[in-house]
Amino acid sequence: MDHLDKLEAQSVYILREAYREFKQLVMLWSIGKDSTVLLWLARKAFFGHVPLPLMHIDTQYKIPEMIEYRDRLARQWKLNMIFGRNEEALSAKCTFPDGRCTRLQCCALLKSEALKHTLSGEWPRWVLDHHTGQYVKTTGGEPFTGVIVGARADEEGSRSKERYFSPRDRHSDWDVSNQPPELWNQFKTDFAPGTHVRIHPLLDWTELNVWEYVERENIPMVSLYFDQGTGQRYRSLGCWPCTKPVQSTSKNVQEIIEELRSGKFANIAERSGRDQDKEDGYGLETLRREGYM
Image (cartoon, rainbow, N blue to C red; front, side, top):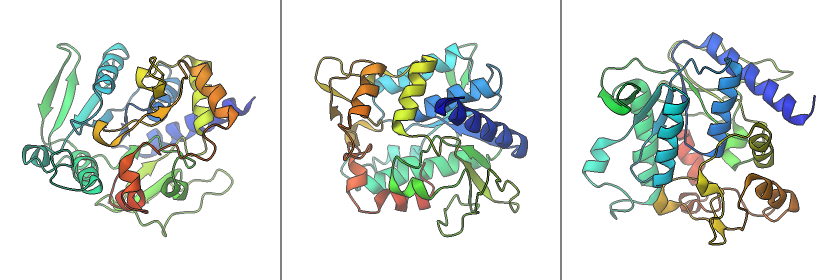
């Protein structure tokens, strides 16, 4: 069993444990490489079928190719696809592109608040109807209390403080100092009523591991990760006003792997193109404490 086999086995184990222990379970799908690998692992864990809904938070500022890719795979793989959004903030144009708030405030409104209220069922959810191929607006959904997320510890500082099973309070707020120990593959899954739990099956994967696995499994990826002849590609995906490409001529998965192994990005943060991370030295941790992915 090689290193990728071990990572895969651990992630599949975490996914199956989560499905066994948490009844109101959902998986977040950001359309990025990590959550797409997580989706692939879920299909493996449950023999080609994903028995839980996938949720995407649509800020309406995602790069168009991301939404096209999401809907294409959702239809092809027959996924129970849901998205949510902060209609009030969008209608009021209370966003960074509209000049009404900072980048971090925009993330808090369009991502953190939208996620919390969509998970709780307080706000509408749009559900993909596979008969029509269209999304249908629904209200009054049951709350999701277990949330599977494709976060990796090496991606960004605050994520290195996570656990495989990480409790939040009923408002999705994260107390970084109050996380359960996880020793020798023993995981706490029995939490007090009202606890909201984030589950992180990819916690010990690295950026290189993810791309090596994508290559091995031939997982389809959104084209934004590859150079289209401009000498640039995206290393991390988000909303277009706050996400910048990196200088890279990698046109396929193998070239990305070679680039990462070369050390070209050894001293450059994976999220260096995400402008909201630069607005405040502890910006992303602040957002994550308040419910951000």
